[in-house]
Image (cartoon, rainbow, N blue to C red; front, side, top):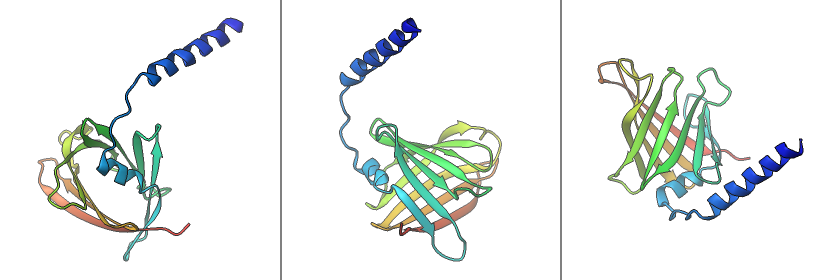
Length: 165
């Protein structure tokens, strides 16, 4: 038992030493914007729904949960990959497309385009996403889905407002 405890302590000390030698990356303005979404948001319009954001992994990832608790709940995890944001969308369609941030024409937009994934070969999947920061308390998602041949089949727009806690 003492040997096991000593091994755990040595591992923790070694890991701490490794982490303390790492440089903290410069702040990425777009990723910082995503982190400020933390909390709960409500879908506006005729359809009911929610989205929540949670910053995790020492601030290195943002977890977005669309329609939490519903049968079609989906999770998207955002993180930095060099100077761009990469996301993986865990879709209710049963696949996991990845999208990489590209340069946006508008300052208030984060634009992501398809960059591969799992379970997406020869089947329909989410292909692109644009997030528009409408204001501090308003947000728009525009998801583009494609069919198995890569043809756009849906352009879904969701407008969210920050929920009062």
